[in-house]
Length: 317
Ligand code: NCD
Image (cartoon, rainbow, N blue to C red; front, side, top):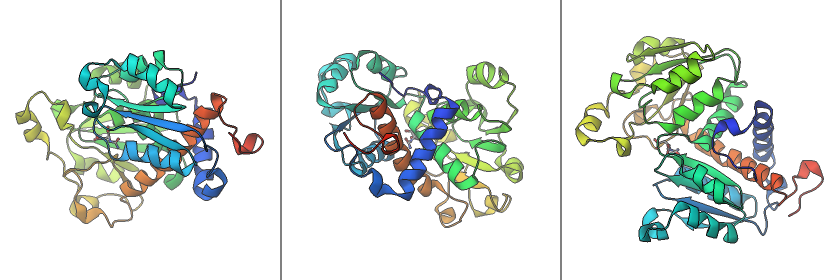
């Protein structure tokens, strides 16, 4: 059974196939509108979510399938003490595929070990968020036309932000990638990611706390929110939450074709005055998240033998 725990579970070739499929869905949604008729996606969300859960659900509905699930631990038997392992065994009887989000790192892996259906990691603590990365890659590929030869600024909470951890893992597989890590000292990228991933592969990167200084060099600026829920004390959060606020003045330093991305939700780190700037693509990015999740659901269900993709001989369940 194939699962998605990390972006690295897909080879570069498989990832390209997935992005091509997502673009095909975007171009001709009707062609894919009934492929999942009779199939069910379960969303098991033990942590808050707007985009990830609803885009998964929208994706399955767009494919003609059905959805079930829960949106908080309180409304599931987790509140009574049920383990993730037990829950997933039961969900395997009710659904064909599931997406799970949990505050504990590794929870999705535990679920995948007991599941009889494909499991997608929809975020595990501060660890990984592979479907946000697929969303980010589709956004970059669609709007820049390439995934290599880019200088990417990652700004904000690089310590707890799982979206940047997954994105780094995914992007270093392309040629000519370099990073500028922009964060306050306390929120720097974890040292194991630097040592085991970036240094190991000799990926060029720079660390700074000065956004303005590096703005003119960037092809993409990926903003993130300070992850309040992963702080041990409120005081530290309050001190750091408004460290970076991207506004019109700072954007004057950026290139005409620099993209501003953000996984959302935004708190204060991007001023709303930027929303109409054509370089601000974070709402478009959320739309790409639906196409790429459609492509992922199709790929995993086809791999499990539950559907046939149209390319391989006609849509059917
Ligand atoms: C992100 C997450 O949950 O990690 N949100 C999302 O899925 N789009 C980013 C965040 O919460 O800051």
